[in-house]
Image 1 (cartoon, one colour):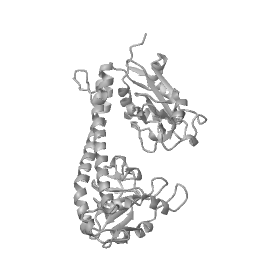
Image 2 (cartoon, one colour):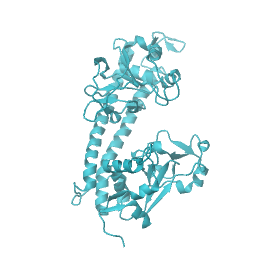
Image 3 (cartoon, helix red, strand yellow):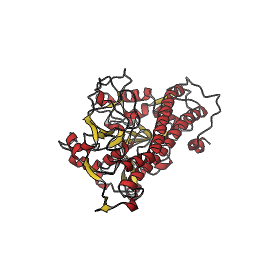
Image 4 (cartoon, helix red, strand yellow):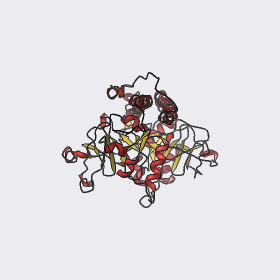
Length: 428
């Protein structure tokens, strides 16, 4: 008979056959040479987020190979942990990831308990208290935090009634669903602007192109100019002194991905910032060190007071008399692979020199056409910015609610909660 306890451990659930823990396939079972261009996705530690799966940089195996690794194939509601270096992270498997395979550097937890809501458990794993506990357990005597089945079995969580667990999960899921919906809208808006740029300035089907004289596939009035002639400022950022006591933030290379800048990855600092290195709306930021990140760039559309970037990023500020920032930003984004080839230095210490950026030439149309492009694109970009701002508020609110709901400081017992669409099937 199950004891009546305020806390319950994964180990107890395992003893009652209500939880199963599976280590990822051994290296002999899944080798790097067996990855293919497309097929069944494999979730490795880099794909494990904070409750979600990061589906960029996925690796794939064939259906036949996945069948041979059937014990490692994932089901809806499974929880996947990273074994090394990311022990505070986990991924709750959704319908989309059913049939995917856990990687060698992951652990999988499968709950079959009628007393535990998987989403509630996943949200508990996202609390600061749990993150601190995991870091302490997994870092003892090790240079890199490492997770094993024994530690997973010691994870404990508050055992509340199943209806209460589901209500808590429903409240937090409603926020996450709104955030994800906004992210999808942002992605569509950004794709729309990118396609507009490509249509006008790559495929050369800009307004009135039929009446323009072309020479070797390029409008005669356009010029190929070095970036140095189009900008008013080109410099690396600052060497920050990080501080949790400050409200000022500094952008790092992790913030720049897929042509956008995510300020949620920025850190706080208390550095004195030279005036020119205070970022302005329309600045183009270019990742300038390291393998894999070098050459990634984005236009800054949202600024905060005294916002800056660190010295691994190059600030490229448009001269508005010669080029529109949005046009310059997209032109530089197309140079990602080229900049990557220009990098100098040893592996892991590669650098993109400012001189290389300055001398790189881009094709520049007349300012009138650039202004037309900006007029078309700006309302779309502005809407994407508003959605990002909304997501920051939603994220902050969710993160404030999370520990209070999990701890019981905010009671949901007397609330009539409407379950979000993504939960209705499992709550039914």
